[in-house]
Structures are given as structure tokens and as C-alpha cells.
Length: 145
Image 1 (spheres, rainbow, N blue to C red):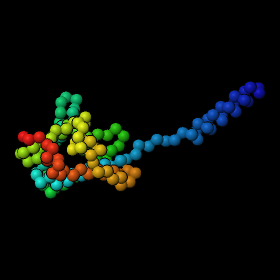
Image 2: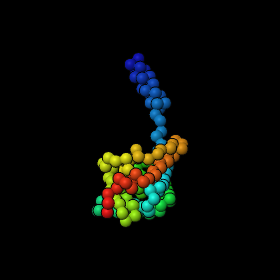
Image 3: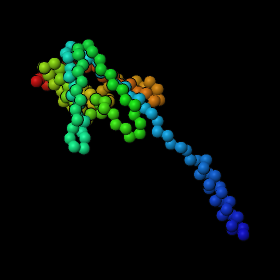
Image 4: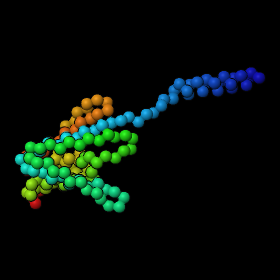
């Protein structure tokens, strides 16, 4: 009988400890905003390629000289967005004069697929803003067409 009391006590203590230590995990919402500013003195065309199971999809964005482009996505656990920075590769054309091509493995301070090249601002626990400004240096470091 004393053995049964000891096991029952240990079992009750274990259940109590387990119930107080368990926490409910809730996926948090995260909003990401990306802003692109064109100060390069050229009109810019950005073509982004996204890999799919059967091939590639592409999106084309135009960014006139002096213009801005803003993108926003609401990320939940495992969600996929169509932000430029989430593309698999990107081509940036400066007018009909120069071109830059990037993937996530391209090391360059002008790679718009690399979040490290953006100015980051944490607006809140749930919202981050990233800004990339195209300048004359982006144009100068691009390849001739």
C-alpha cells in the first residue's frame, strides 16, 4: 500500500509540473514592407524570377527615375510572399544601357536579393521595413547591354 501511495504522489506531482510548464505556441503575424527608391538618374526595370515545381514565374516592375516602389506582405508560419527580395534571381535594367543580374549567392553591395544591402527599420515586434535606394553607383557597377 505505501508503494502505491508513493507512485500516486509522484504521478500527481509529474502531471502538475507538466501542466504548468506547457505553453501554447501561437504563430505570430509578421508584416514586411520593402521600399525601392530610384535615384540612379535612369528608368529601371526589375524582372524577378520565382522557381516553381514546373519551371519559373516572373514578375516585372518598372521604377521611373525619381520614383518609388513599395511592396508589403503579411507573413504567417510557412507562408510565401512575392516580394522582390524573395525571388530566386533578379535582373535590373537601367534604361536600355546597363544590366545587373543577381541570385542569392551573388556577393555584391548592389544585390537587391540580399537583405544586408537594405536599410532596416524595426517598426514594432510585428513589423519590419526595408529600404533599398538605387544610386548612380548601382548604374556604374552594372554591365553594359
